[in-house]
Length: 43
Image 1 (cartoon, rainbow, N blue to C red):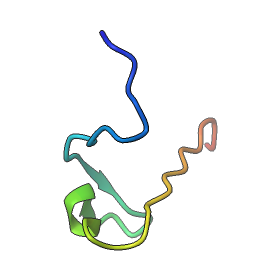
Image 2 (tube, one colour):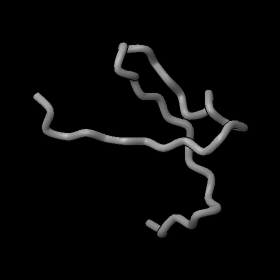
Image 3 (tube, rainbow, N blue to C red):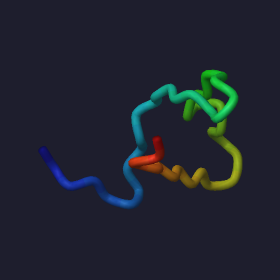
């Protein structure tokens, strides 16, 4: 596996938002930068 570079394109993927709706990374292409936050251990 190679180390990604800042200019590399990220593959499209789908996650669920806090309301359970599917959100695709491609939904945000062409907009301002996207910041992803992953929270662990919340139960």
